[in-house]
Length: 462
View 1 (spheres, rainbow, N blue to C red):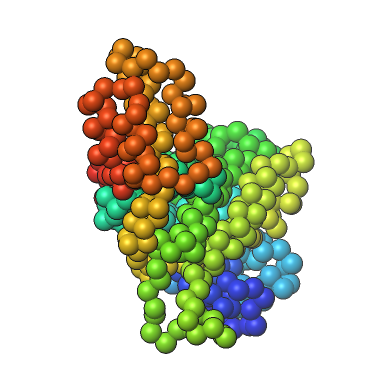
View 2: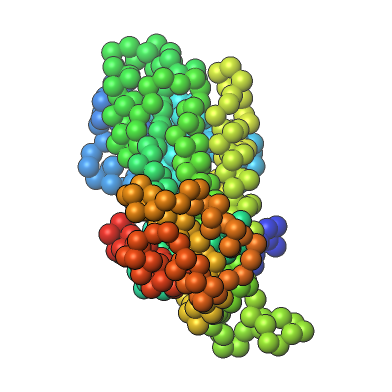
């Protein structure tokens, strides 16, 4: 289905085309027209099966011949459709005329008037876009996002017990483990994947204002809502019984919101990974033949995560715009959605590109546990939380007469660097039990990670 090559207007059709080629194949203009033909053929088969207007049902061989003709849609067909549209100045009408030509090829011209029978263009378009969106999200985006979530989960388990100084408000804070922090992102991403996976893909076929008026008037003997439901569900979509001329696009907006939310999770991941690299907690693995900086040979730039960050921001803007625009129409119909939907593939393309860059970037980094250990060893003051919380427990248990333990510890540690000896001397002078003192004196920043590794093991599926 390769089209004539033209100078690309944007990076998805140029610089990054090879990285999103599978999505382009699913959501290209050629794929849209092929899907429109698929919908028109299935509608024709449905009408003849129900003997609408007295039509004789197509034989199994005739149905197969029509379906095969569409499944074998070629670049020559794309060109032929383009020539028809140049005359009609209407894309869906061009598809109708093209299909009539196919019926002529198979000696079925007597069914020409059942092509696009009682349909408005939106009947064909809403179903076609729903199918394209379903194929692109379920067939391309979700598998890649799921693979990324699994990549993250694998790294989380691998590094679950590696202690790391946390940073809240950018300052040294209660230690964690690097694996547990990665597990947070894997968990967040999987929630959004589950949400997107559960979203329905709605479709309708009910005429110019959603009333089946032309259908009912032309052939009143048919139960048109039931026939429409059977047809839409036969395409693998969920039937929407109540619409104006257009399907309301609420389900589409839910999907776009889900993909955008997943993108915001990944944007957070990309900026955190970038920061960990800048802090020395992560080191980048040199890739043979690559250049980090055009002037500084020592550098390895974190380009995968920076590229992802930028593309996620573009995707978020487009997906938000799609969701906002598509859920609003003036009265029973306007054409704002028609132009807007042509950018669905672009929005998904930028998101997919980001996902793939992050996946690749994760294979090009490793932890520097020595740097993490060094930072922990230089920040004993993070144990202040442990000390004041133990004092609280001692007070409640009646083994300490101290008051306001937070203020007691704050005086020693706030805004000051302390070391192991300083803290042990402080602990030894506290009015707490010997058991509590022993527990605190045995504690180090490296060990003050709670049950971080257990959280990963128990609550994150590998």
